[in-house]
Amino acid sequence: MRLKLKRPRLRKLSDQPQPAWLSRDLWRRRIVFWVGAAATGLVSVCFAYAADQAQLLFHWLASQAVWVPLLLAPLGFMFCAHLARTVFPGAAGSGIQHAIAACEMTDSVARSKLLSLRVAIGKIFLTLVGIASGGSIGREGPTVQIGAAIMLKAGQIGGADRARGLILAGSAAGISAAFNAPLAGIVFAIEEMSRSFEQKTASLVLSAVIIAGLVSLGLVGNYDYFGQASGHVVGVEGWLMVGLCGVVGGLFGALFGRVMLWSTQQIRRWTRVMPFKRTLVIAGLCGLGVALIGLATGGSTFGTGYDQARAAIEGEILPWYFAPAKFVATLLSSVSGIPGGIFAPSLAVGTGVGSLFALTLGGSAGIAALLGMTGYFAGVVQAPITAFVIILEMTGDNGDVIPIMCASVLGYGVSNLLMPQSLYHGLASMLTSND
Image (cartoon, rainbow, N blue to C red):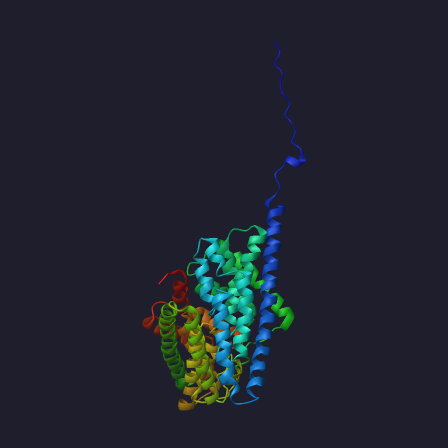
């Protein structure tokens, strides 16, 4: 009996498994992701330009008559707060807390209420109106929410299901493009957005930051956000300045955070009964307060505070009243219910704190402003590494790295003792609670 042996069947070339890097789905997801990162960079640059024009528009309108801010700010705040509640729900506030809350959500429907293209469009429009109304707000925080929304949408189009990684990547890309600070974008995603950073999201964040940064670099070039700081920390007097700016900056940063969290909670409860009327009342009163403070300070507290901060870092001593006035104007703008960030105004308040010490103790006004900015900003956001990295990148100051680190750590330490829960995470918890 003869045994018949079967000849092995040769597999066709088409049956061979393709290497992972040749997968169509993989490349489709990558290309959509890269387009989303590039779009984040482009939108960030255009948003920055539009914000500058909105601020110029306000100053032009305010120059027409002394009473214009008294009318423009309350009406503008009421308009923005109303639309943020009715037409663009999820657009009110800074935007960073929205991205943090969305990171923790597993329900895609609930997440889309905070991060969507509709919310991003409303965020841009209403932030510009708020700046044009004289609000003490910035566009950097909103850029975080906008970047996260764009990247989340890109992930949906590309078929990616890593929502958390996409939100982190979009948030980091937004910070990178807004400040021209790629390292700060990465650190911000690790330290503030995600208190536990997953290794598998690292490549997403890094590639998004690089692409968004390249777009920003190509459109506006390489620049220092606040220019070069004047002076350096020298001798005992210089290190005394470091300690004072860190401790006092952290103290006032914690005060801002505590008052803002408490006020936001109380306003939420009070407006729940008659949302339409009471939202307009709060917005109108806050707008009137911002206008009165602006007029009393000669207009220095209107807007982002970028010009004053840059002047202080370059060596100009700000008036003694600038820091407390900008502090209150920023607080009123933040609790009014309008969209707008606190990054730039907080940096401006910090330079005012430094100027106060330069006035009383002497020494270099530029380095005092830089140290005050670091201490106060670290106290507000309670993210010390982000604080000193972002400030070093914005000013290009490589000669005072250790003093700036010290001021940041001191500011964070004092703030954390007085306010264990950070501002953004406190606001994020309100978005996910029914209280």
